Image (spheres, one colour):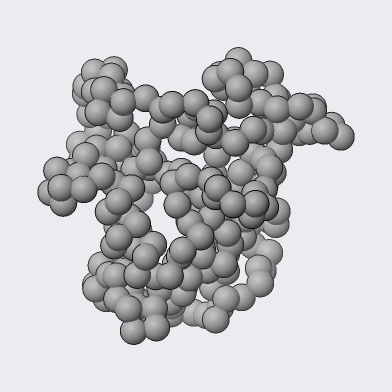
Length: 218
């Protein structure tokens, strides 16, 4: 990751360095599942090679635009729109680790017992880094509730949308959620059993226990 006002790395060179460090498979493909940012970076290169577009442009043109997610992008808004600030408890085992592992310019001032985070971007857009409001995330969730269709606009065929929600290879127990330093979110698309929910926090800890209900999105 890098501060939002700093230039990012050359993505092709960045991926080459990572692949040189991880040149051997951890296990046979399909034998088990393991979360991997590197896997999504490789997928991004495949998308760029086959589409002739950058991952960012592909996502904008094939997903964000058609779904009407007009306030979500790989960059912070240039307008005066409010943007959440991420926080981490200062008295936490993670706090010293963050000071050690995060690049300069990421950690901000302390506020009421919390470490704040300045605006930053991840170094590989293929594995994350979208910035946007919860209303746009809800549209993505509604698309899944429609098995790839939102208001007559289809971005996935029914089979692909269903496959994205299936666990075909077992790994560690997990929830469909994600996040980064100072951020946390949880997405629960269940077309077969409504309601669905989306939960987000600007604090690096879940807002609600895993089994506590969230506000439904119809």
